[in-house]
Image (cartoon, rainbow, N blue to C red; front, side):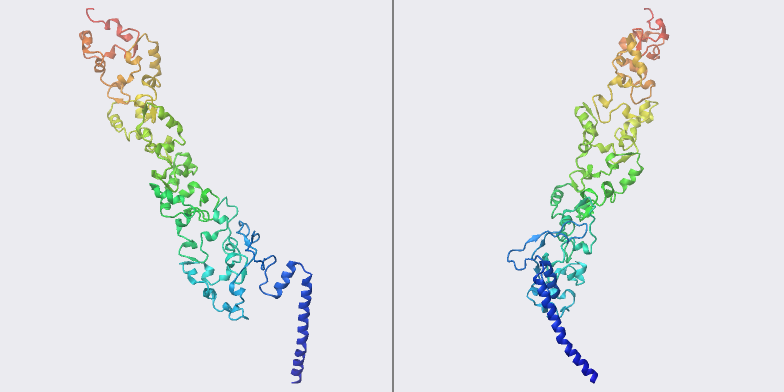
Length: 518
């Protein structure tokens, strides 16, 4: 008992001493503060009292809130956030010292309810009425983003986006070559609802509707277009765009190393859906240069078009962007290949790849036979075939686009034939006597350029062919010639040239050309 009494006496005696020491320390502190700088005063006061404004805050200034740069509020590598207020926002209950509105009592730090229920006494719970909820909101962790007393950011945010968002979400790499403007400006909430939403990723609006808030030209163009890219028509912008840069099926919505914020560069992105093209390209012998380079958009519009296959321009007009010499030649030509004149380049050429030269759909003659089917039919029945035709070398004689010559011949008449039969050209040039059709280059008046059942590809049996020009009345003497009725004219006469005016062959002799009795 005596010990207890002694203890109580000691305790009672120490209280005045502690109180005196505390008061002395406080007075000393106030004395020190009188000679301290502004920042030092703020630190001392904040130690003893709650709610002391930070140094520089214009708390007693009736002037409207001023703004200044928010340096230091962003996560490393992030762009500058919106300006930070110089005068803080103060939570009304805190400003009025109505602590019991949120806490169990004025002297308690415990909240009056669990999680966000306290906040929803004033703030409607419709904030989290959406199907998709921000995880901190769903967990009732309002203070993960908001300061419950005061803050220098709107909505009492502890930090401004994107620094605030970056506390949980990995910051976007500053090395990205392309960035979505809202992301670069730190405007996360221009696309995302920070509390809840009925859309994935907490988007303010679903899919393309959100993108069209800024990119309004796309739906306008889409409404008028005849041909629409399926992902665009379905509002699946993000299948090609990254939504933190643009629509996210093709674009990254935040940033990308590719133009237009594409998820993958050029052709690699298109191949995500059109996988058959790279497969065919890998096996092909001949590849269209833009396709090989992954430059799909040099021919196709990735959103919409008035042309089939989403082409930027119709048919030949698109091809002429690179192959302008063909359109120039076509404009001047007298004879034009019908598919070329109609702009149907793809009726002969594969615009992506081929195993044939010039990206032809089929090799040589097989392609020509698609339209000119009578030629292979005739060729199959003929006894004699022109070698280039049999080999499918149609373009050795014909220009597939245009020409100044009939039948799209590369050169007129005999000049074309002389490309191969140059020995005949030389002989005719030196000969004193020439057969008029041969001299005039009218080879096709006697020969079929493709096939025949007669030797030398003659149009008719020799005697009948000669009589087409040399009528029977002029051949009376020939008919009277012994034994000539059944013989071919070319047995004695050369059909091209000769040293005699009758084009007699040397072996025929002079007498063979004479009429009996003459």
